[in-house]
Length: 171
Image (cartoon, rainbow, N blue to C red):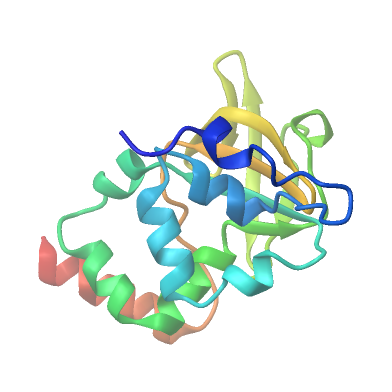
């Protein structure tokens, strides 16, 4: 169910009030990104990602979050610092369009970590995630939908040990 976008947008587009569509609006408006939406809100990143940007967001679907080991998501949502570092690991500054990506390229994220781009006959991979929908344009950037959650590999040792201990507890 829910509201149709058209019901929603009617009559709000007057000249005086130009509503910009932010990368957050795209995530919030997507039916497949409810977990990401919850996470972005929990981490308090809505305002940051609604700024001028531009931002490139690699947005894991709900299925991608569901594929994490059981309990991981709850553990991450309970740890705001970890949550923030994981989410900012999915965001790069600048509008990186799919046409800007090249095989073997490294994309530096807002978390200061790097994502590896690999392009082959199967498509475009960002680290371990496949881009399933590319170049969803927002006024302050672009969103690429991916099918796996990107976990930062480096960064503070604390984070790694937290993630590892979380995974070990689960396995």
